Amino acid sequence: MAAAVAVQETQHLLDASPSAGYGALRSVPNAVESVDAAQRDETNGESFDDIPRAKRKLGLTSAVFLVFNRVIGTGIYATPSVILRTSGSVGVALVMWLVGALIAAAGTAVYVELGTGLPRNGGEKNYLEFIYRRPRFLVSCSFVVYTLIIGSAAANSIVFGEYVLNALSIEPTRFSSRLVAILVLTFCLLIHGTLLTFGVRLQNALGAFKLLILSAISLLGILSLLDYLPVRSEYDPPTNFSSWAALWEGSGTTGANGIVTALYSVIWSFIGYANANYALSEVRDPVRTIKRAAPIAMTAVSVVYMAINVAYFAVVSKGDILGSRRIVAALFFRNLFGPTTERALSVFIALSTLGNLLAGQFTQGRVIQELGREGILPYSSFFASNKPFGAPLAGLFTQYIVSCLFVLGPPPGDAYLFMISTSSYSLALINTLVSFGLLLLHTPAYKPFGWSPPFRAPRIITVLFFLSNVFLVVVPLIPPPPGRRVYDALPYYLHPLVALSVSLLGGAYWYIWSVWLPRRGKYMLERVWVLQEDGVPRWVFRRRGLVGGGGG
Image (tube, rainbow, N blue to C red; front, side, top):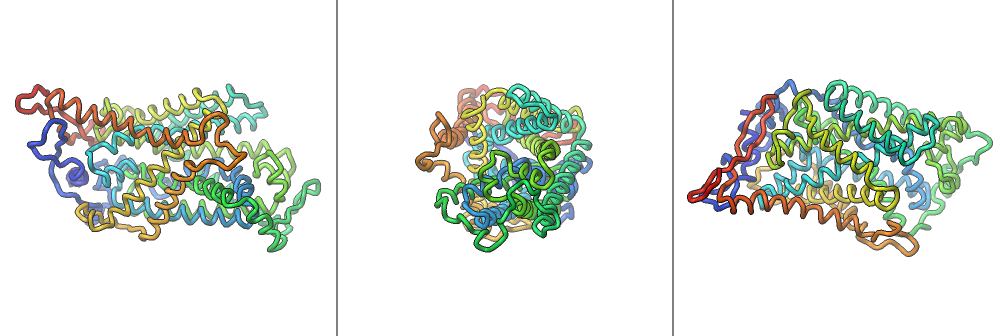
């Protein structure tokens, strides 16, 4: 039955008339069934993807920390100063963080609905395929390129290298920080590619440690606010919460552009709520688990973010935050315990970043494996395999190579910023398409798709999430105000232009593979369901020659 459900899920994607012409794609014609069929056989979504029960290693705790670790990396230690600068006042900055939490809650609800409706590895790949079915496999081929761009861990691995070197009292250089970055990427590859259980336990432990440290920082800030732990006398005493007027002092001074910039930065600080969706084929009781794990994780993130900001503003004066070139977390520890605590902070940030890297690479390797299971990649059997260690080593290695190239290739400055911005913009494009597609699924025109997930996000929530992503897509297209530049030498619109153009590469591959070559070779691509030696099924495309053709 499990295999039947998997076949049914893709029928509308593949149904083709037996008399279709060159380039047609055929598969078993069955009606679409949503996951409520799996619910009825009491598997909580496990029968939706024909994965052996023994391979489902992730429970509720692991799913929670997949999201928690992915959202919280290094941003919370530095981003609050950026938000304050662009907001103008402490009060507006806190409001921005609250708005960001609400938008993240909307995104979480959207992805819980999608995850319960299509509970299998792959995340957005599955949702885009399900919604945008014509031309067949075009969206899948385009998503391949975006996967490699979005999944790059280059930026965080370099940040990890810099903080490790700071913790060791070694001056970071371009060579040394990138060397450590390559080493940590290699560590993530080996851990998740060869020691699956240990890797999951390690990232869970790092997530728990991160939660403990951030909770401790929040508590220290509250104690300082209540005068139980005063700021050291040699530093400016903060007055951010001394009165209502002080809280809102500076509001409106940055103009509309400043508010837009602040909101833009805050929204990106919450990205990662969909991380568990990429690994649902390895989650026990995936429907029930994702309905609990994602909200738990994002509630924890939102509470931590708000508490940390209050703690920073309770300990560090507004002038100090805006005037110092140091990250706000360093100022926090300096004001309470003196400048010698900077090395300890570097250790905390490095471990926080390591948890983020492990959670990101764990899931991105599975997205590539899922693309291999679809059969659309060259050497799909290689990418779909779990050999030899019961983990998607091929997918992890592919993402490892891409990340290493990004670490070693672009020099600091415009090239590096362009790489990061292109990755972020690509994710915004995908989220826009996903949220718009979910709105379509609830319209009468899409009723034949049979979309009936166990959880439904309220329509207004989906609209809010869609609009927030339209915001992220549109803002980079607006010229920056006079006196400000996105890049030193590159045009401000280059990363949106490149991100939008990336889909053309996937489109070219799709046309050559599924249209041009079959027409030239006079064959039809027929997709069949096969079972690998490791017990994981996948799709295989076979050429079927047409009458008068020479296909094999």
